[in-house]
Image (cartoon, rainbow, N blue to C red):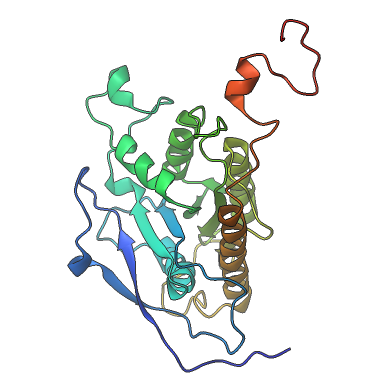
Length: 277
């Protein structure tokens, strides 16, 4: 199998969603990312019309260094190298209210930035949830983001399906303790339950040696050079792109047998319903 590496290095942009609701990212302030070198063998499709959203669910507010962001950058560079527009949200920088409604200001909270972020979710063909391991589990920030995604899961798209249909999801995990697979299991189950389509090998992570030790970006950690992590990150990213391309080209998941509006109206295919005429 040919694995030639070209000498072209694309200059592309990865955008970070502003922490202030209602503001617009200034292209002059976007962070340039040097993409991965393109191989001699061309990809099977074009991906430049796709959009990706990555939630960094670190507990660290900006501008503190996030090890999770280091792994995100690897995946984002691959996507950006194919022309994909990538937005990165550090969730802890935003006032995401606790709750299970689309807009918690309608349920007693004074502020809630989730409705603004949810618009970014709907714009994205690809969603990646990334975060650290704490006590063998996902961070509290990760859980809050998933809860708010769940809060909007009853909303419908134009075809009468749940709103997340036709989008793909994956996850990235970092830490210096065991639990990456447990965290990924919870995230990927949650995403598919909400309506996202999950490709094969849709997770990647780095946890280092068990016990206290260097984190992903710390000198001597070996994280950025770890072949297992890099391979899984590349496979996850490309599988997300391939599946997003397939779904976008066919108009999403076929709207047959999975329309909530039709079911509620009494048209329940495959189940007898004598009241429906």
